[in-house]
Image 1: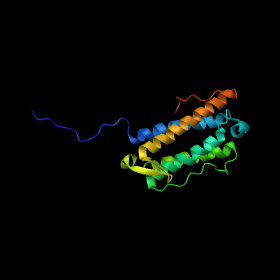
Image 2 (image 1 turned 45 degrees about the horizontal axis):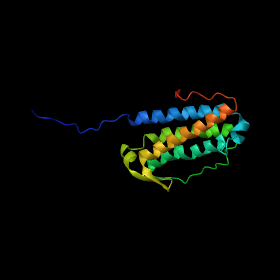
Image 3 (image 1 turned 90 degrees about the vertical axis):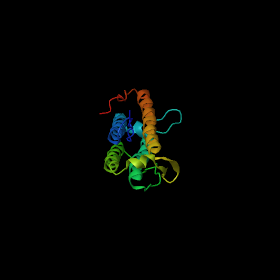
Image 4 (image 1 turned 180 degrees about the vertical axis):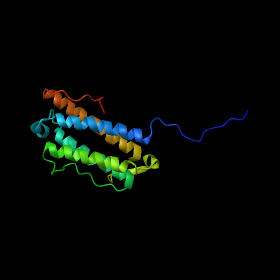
Length: 164
Protein backbone atom coordinates (compact mmCIF):
# COMPACT_ATOMS: atom_id res chain seq x y z
CA UNK A 1 0.00 0.00 0.00
CA UNK A 2 1.42 3.36 -1.04
CA UNK A 3 1.23 6.29 1.36
CA UNK A 4 1.06 9.87 0.23
CA UNK A 5 2.05 12.88 2.24
CA UNK A 6 0.84 16.39 1.90
CA UNK A 7 3.34 19.14 1.25
CA UNK A 8 1.09 21.92 2.48
CA UNK A 9 1.44 23.06 6.05
CA UNK A 10 -1.58 23.14 8.30
CA UNK A 11 -2.35 26.47 9.89
CA UNK A 12 -4.64 27.70 12.60
CA UNK A 13 -5.63 31.02 11.02
CA UNK A 14 -4.77 32.73 7.79
CA UNK A 15 -3.31 36.19 7.26
CA UNK A 16 -6.71 37.80 6.74
CA UNK A 17 -8.01 36.32 9.99
CA UNK A 18 -4.94 37.62 11.83
CA UNK A 19 -5.64 41.12 10.55
CA UNK A 20 -9.28 40.82 11.63
CA UNK A 21 -8.10 39.79 15.09
CA UNK A 22 -5.72 42.76 15.34
CA UNK A 23 -8.30 45.23 14.06
CA UNK A 24 -10.82 43.86 16.55
CA UNK A 25 -8.45 44.74 19.38
CA UNK A 26 -7.92 48.18 17.86
CA UNK A 27 -11.68 48.77 17.84
CA UNK A 28 -11.89 48.00 21.57
CA UNK A 29 -8.91 50.27 22.24
CA UNK A 30 -10.59 53.07 20.29
CA UNK A 31 -13.76 52.66 22.35
CA UNK A 32 -11.61 52.77 25.50
CA UNK A 33 -10.14 56.08 24.34
CA UNK A 34 -13.62 57.40 23.55
CA UNK A 35 -14.78 56.61 27.11
CA UNK A 36 -12.19 58.90 28.73
CA UNK A 37 -13.11 62.41 29.80
CA UNK A 38 -10.73 64.88 28.10
CA UNK A 39 -9.03 66.14 31.26
CA UNK A 40 -8.47 62.70 32.82
CA UNK A 41 -7.17 61.31 29.55
CA UNK A 42 -4.15 63.60 29.83
CA UNK A 43 -3.83 63.93 33.62
CA UNK A 44 -5.12 60.87 35.47
CA UNK A 45 -2.80 58.08 36.53
CA UNK A 46 -2.51 55.55 39.32
CA UNK A 47 0.63 54.37 41.07
CA UNK A 48 3.04 56.31 38.90
CA UNK A 49 1.82 54.76 35.64
CA UNK A 50 1.66 56.93 32.55
CA UNK A 51 -1.59 58.64 31.57
CA UNK A 52 -3.79 56.90 29.02
CA UNK A 53 -2.92 59.64 26.52
CA UNK A 54 0.76 58.73 26.91
CA UNK A 55 -0.05 55.05 26.50
CA UNK A 56 -2.06 55.83 23.37
CA UNK A 57 0.88 57.76 21.94
CA UNK A 58 3.12 54.74 22.51
CA UNK A 59 0.63 52.46 20.76
CA UNK A 60 0.40 54.93 17.88
CA UNK A 61 4.18 54.92 17.54
CA UNK A 62 4.13 51.15 16.99
CA UNK A 63 0.95 49.96 15.22
CA UNK A 64 1.03 51.37 11.70
CA UNK A 65 4.85 51.66 11.68
CA UNK A 66 5.01 47.89 12.27
CA UNK A 67 2.70 47.14 9.35
CA UNK A 68 4.70 49.53 7.17
CA UNK A 69 8.01 48.07 8.34
CA UNK A 70 6.90 44.50 7.66
CA UNK A 71 5.61 45.50 4.22
CA UNK A 72 8.52 47.67 3.10
CA UNK A 73 11.51 46.78 5.32
CA UNK A 74 11.65 50.50 6.19
CA UNK A 75 11.49 51.02 9.94
CA UNK A 76 11.16 54.52 11.30
CA UNK A 77 12.54 55.39 14.71
CA UNK A 78 10.04 55.22 17.55
CA UNK A 79 8.41 58.56 18.37
CA UNK A 80 6.38 57.97 21.52
CA UNK A 81 6.22 61.65 22.48
CA UNK A 82 3.97 62.87 19.66
CA UNK A 83 3.66 66.40 21.11
CA UNK A 84 1.29 67.43 18.32
CA UNK A 85 -1.44 65.18 19.79
CA UNK A 86 -2.86 67.43 22.49
CA UNK A 87 -6.57 66.59 22.49
CA UNK A 88 -8.77 63.53 22.58
CA UNK A 89 -9.95 64.42 19.07
CA UNK A 90 -6.31 64.45 17.91
CA UNK A 91 -5.71 61.00 19.40
CA UNK A 92 -8.88 59.58 17.86
CA UNK A 93 -8.03 60.99 14.42
CA UNK A 94 -4.49 59.67 14.65
CA UNK A 95 -5.79 56.25 15.73
CA UNK A 96 -8.13 56.13 12.74
CA UNK A 97 -5.35 57.18 10.35
CA UNK A 98 -3.08 54.54 11.87
CA UNK A 99 -5.75 51.87 11.37
CA UNK A 100 -6.16 52.94 7.75
CA UNK A 101 -2.40 52.58 7.23
CA UNK A 102 -2.39 49.11 8.79
CA UNK A 103 -5.13 48.04 6.38
CA UNK A 104 -3.35 49.68 3.44
CA UNK A 105 -0.01 47.97 4.04
CA UNK A 106 -1.29 44.60 5.25
CA UNK A 107 -1.70 43.11 1.77
CA UNK A 108 1.90 44.04 0.97
CA UNK A 109 3.28 41.87 3.81
CA UNK A 110 4.36 38.52 2.40
CA UNK A 111 3.75 35.33 4.34
CA UNK A 112 7.50 34.76 4.33
CA UNK A 113 8.06 38.09 6.10
CA UNK A 114 6.33 36.73 9.22
CA UNK A 115 9.02 34.04 9.50
CA UNK A 116 12.02 36.24 8.67
CA UNK A 117 14.38 37.58 11.27
CA UNK A 118 14.00 41.35 11.42
CA UNK A 119 15.24 44.29 13.45
CA UNK A 120 12.14 46.37 14.15
CA UNK A 121 12.60 50.10 14.63
CA UNK A 122 16.33 49.58 14.14
CA UNK A 123 16.73 48.02 17.58
CA UNK A 124 14.39 45.09 18.36
CA UNK A 125 15.47 41.73 16.98
CA UNK A 126 12.88 39.06 16.36
CA UNK A 127 10.76 37.58 13.63
CA UNK A 128 7.98 39.29 11.76
CA UNK A 129 5.35 37.36 13.68
CA UNK A 130 6.99 37.84 17.10
CA UNK A 131 7.16 41.58 16.49
CA UNK A 132 3.52 41.73 15.43
CA UNK A 133 2.44 39.66 18.44
CA UNK A 134 4.38 42.01 20.71
CA UNK A 135 2.54 45.00 19.20
CA UNK A 136 -0.85 43.35 19.72
CA UNK A 137 0.04 42.17 23.25
CA UNK A 138 1.39 45.62 24.16
CA UNK A 139 -1.88 47.21 23.03
CA UNK A 140 -3.93 44.77 25.12
CA UNK A 141 -1.70 45.43 28.15
CA UNK A 142 -2.02 49.22 27.86
CA UNK A 143 -5.74 49.02 27.16
CA UNK A 144 -6.10 47.05 30.40
CA UNK A 145 -4.36 49.91 32.21
CA UNK A 146 -6.94 52.20 30.62
CA UNK A 147 -9.71 49.90 31.92
CA UNK A 148 -8.31 50.26 35.45
CA UNK A 149 -8.22 54.04 35.07
CA UNK A 150 -11.80 54.14 33.79
CA UNK A 151 -13.04 52.00 36.67
CA UNK A 152 -11.19 54.23 39.15
CA UNK A 153 -12.99 57.18 37.55
CA UNK A 154 -16.36 55.44 37.95
CA UNK A 155 -16.68 54.72 34.22
CA UNK A 156 -17.49 51.25 32.90
CA UNK A 157 -14.97 50.30 30.21
CA UNK A 158 -16.13 48.77 26.92
CA UNK A 159 -16.60 45.01 26.76
CA UNK A 160 -13.27 43.60 25.58
CA UNK A 161 -14.99 40.71 23.83
CA UNK A 162 -16.99 42.97 21.55
CA UNK A 163 -14.43 43.32 18.79
CA UNK A 164 -16.82 44.28 16.01
